[in-house]
Image (cartoon, protein in one colour):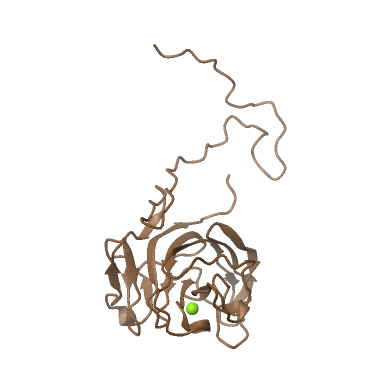
Length: 255
Ligand code: MG
C-alpha cells in the first residue's frame, strides 16, 4: 500500500511581486521548468549520452549532421569508440544546421604519435558560428603561446589553467556561447564565452574582441548574422572527436 504523504502548499498568491517581474515570490502560477533527462558522464572507454533536449551533432553513427569542403560529404573518418578523426588536408567540417547562442558539449583526443611541438601537436579547433574559436591542441607538456594553447579563446585569452590529459586520452569541453548582436550594422552586444575544460572553469563569461584571427587584432568590423554553423578545424593533425551535442539558448533567464 502506498504511503499517504502530507500535502503541502505548491506556492502562494499573497506574497510581494518580485521587482522587474510579473511573478510573486513563490508564485503558485509561475511555470515549472521543463523536465529534461540529464546527460550521463563519459569515461575514457566510452562516450556518455546526451541530455534529452539536446540537438545531437555526432554520436558515432555517421556524418549526417555535417558537410565538408565545398558542401560535399566530410572526408574525415569514423573510428572505434564512437569517434570521428580528422583526415588531414581534406578541410574543415561544418554542421548543416546553424546555431546562435548555445550550450555546446564536445569531446576530443589528440594523436599519440607526436611529429611536432607547439602549434603542430594535436591542433584543431571548435568554431562557434564558424567564426569564434576555442582552440583544440595537445597542450600536455607542450609549450606554446598562451593565447593559442588548449582551451584558449584563440589569439585573445589564455585559459585560466592547463587541464590537459596525455595524448590519446579524452578531453571534455563544455561551452556557453552568447552570439554577438548587430543592429543597423553596428555592434549592439559583443560575443561572450564561458568554457569548462575537463570540468574546470577556463573562461567566465569572457567578452570576445571579435571573430578569431591569426597574428592580427580581432574586431567586430564585419557584421554577421545571429547564427552560423559549428565548425571543426582540419589543422593537419589526426585529432578525434566524439559525443557532440548542442542546446540552443533562446534566452538566458528563466521566466
Ligand atoms: Mg586550432
